[in-house]
Length: 537
Image (cartoon, rainbow, N blue to C red):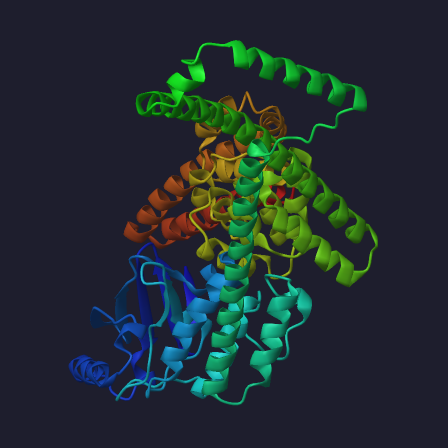
């Protein structure tokens, strides 16, 4: 994907590589050997060496310099939009390292990549002798803008972002952005980032401690509950009977033999045997009881968790229906906090719709890949849709739906065909049929249609446009064959004209050549009319 960089240059990202090119006349020197040596000297002078991706090859082609980069394990800068806020903060810390470097870095979004292996943001281009950086931001201003770009859907920051511009619409993020905007030095930015990280870590540790305490309390209650006897309240009548029984027992004991069972049990051997039996019995009781208790406790916890989820969903819908913008933002965050995997099917669809409402396209696709269809349909209808689609496609894994939509907006027919293993609504069906027809691949179109028979909607849409274009396709082929024959006749007549020496015969051949050329042009016009009629449908 080709993107503008450093005013006069371009950078192309493809898989694990990037290639930056720029006109030689915009550099301080056109000698590649000198430029390469100056680059090496500047690299040696850097202090935060791990904050940059270095060119592994510098060369020239025609009138342009080329810098090649190995980006294995890296993604482009918008990839940060896929992370949670607490993760992005750690990447922001590495941006500060770049700002603290004593070199003029190019502070443009396309000049930065996300190293997923080292969990760092790294820069590509910086100024050195012979290479001019045309965006003259100070490190402080460049860093501040880059941080805001990591949090918003903007390509550049021209003013204070609105709440709706943020990828994650949470109060914590809004406050963080406000604090960053108020800073006046790199050190202050560093303090804001560090303090926010510490606050998050403290909050998480508190939640973890509370969770552990709850678990410990729950286990303790289960254990103590098993060994406490429920008090038995006796009536006066029961107490009287018990007293009589005790008297009877004492009388019986006085008449019993001296070597009773109690006597046997209280001998050393007897006591050891008794304690062993009681210990085994107690252990068996404990294990059986705790297993049943744990199962009941787990069921209770699951029921409580399910109830909490339902309450959160209900609260989210209530806030959303209030039609208050602030309440709706809270509703988005509330439903999001439940977690996509914890939602019922119907509510999952609603969460994806809410992501789309907030333009969280990357998050929507990462959550449910099928949302690519809705994202593509929306962006294609927008004024800057092509640019937005290209940016989105560059920030996520390869996506055939987005690739198809990008190709369809540029009439790149072969790319549409290569990415046609998708579902087809009317718009996509019309464009893919157009692609097959205008590239004379009618048989391949039939193969695609046959493959979609089990997908009723796609099949019907493809058949509808195939039927519409079939007559036009046949007519276009006939015109093409007729024009080919006419052009061959024209070429042969031109050869005769060129070879003819007789003046009168030459004039006659000239008229024939002109007529044939006119007829060929007319056939071409008719063919073009059919093409335009296909595109216009």
